[in-house]
Image 1: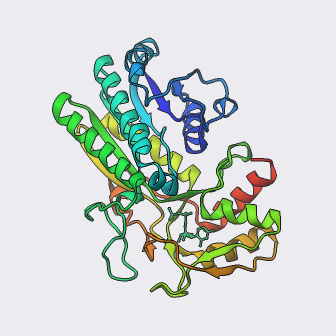
Image 2 (image 1 turned 90 degrees about the horizontal axis):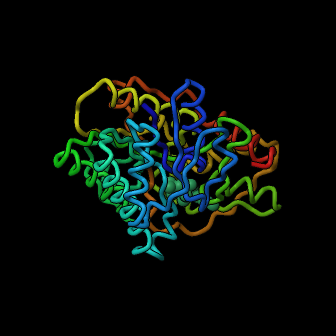
Length: 325
Ligand code: UDP
């Protein structure tokens, strides 16, 4: 049976596709190539569908049958928090609508295994004592339309499990960065590490969004996970779907260790050899002081653990950047 990877031509999807290809799985990629690039999937067949378009359901189901798809890894989505606040209905249409059409096609084609790319954005601003890790039992309270669409899609897959037997593993990604190969770097400049690399190259001063948080150095703490580790978690999730019968699971994907914005900037200085002289500016609205994953569940259940810490993440991001991303 083949694995269908939606968003397989994107930054994260292309890493998943390459790892699955390396271990010999049969694959088919679905991508609308809005941000993805054909060249990233190599010789894997790619079918071009816009999942948000309802007329896609029947041809998508036909593609699942044609390629003998047994499981879907659903990564395709819009993922910019700020853009989601500006265009909420469009984000719902894209991310919730896209997932709805995918599930309809899966039901029609009899494909009952789903790995869904969810996000730590589902947690919102966690009400935890300083320094605590967040586990999957925390009540999700997203504060952006982006986070809401991810949570609604999780719920949709759970309901489909009750209705027709879909089995889903939701992976809640924390801060994904780095590159597994130089040709698969993050082409988007929307997150801290690529933003800072871009600023340094352009000769601009990096910005720290607030240094008066309740953290040891006053800057926000996040859990940065190497995209290659994250991609490995997808393979572990697929294997789990194959061997287990539980209808629905949610797992954090992080390292369990936090890094502050200053830690990241220090690492960027050390990885690039460039001088990093940041300017501290106003807080960005909606930023939790700390968001670090409790990773015990994924370690115990899927047997997956991140292997890389911050240094190889920034080293590899810089290496891919220099290679032209
Ligand atoms: N950040 C920053 N300067 C920037 C971009 C981001 O200080 O130019 C901070 C941001 O406030 C957050 C952390 O870096 O605390 C990670 O931000 P990012 O947008 O990469 O991911 P998020 O955790 O918000 O999803």
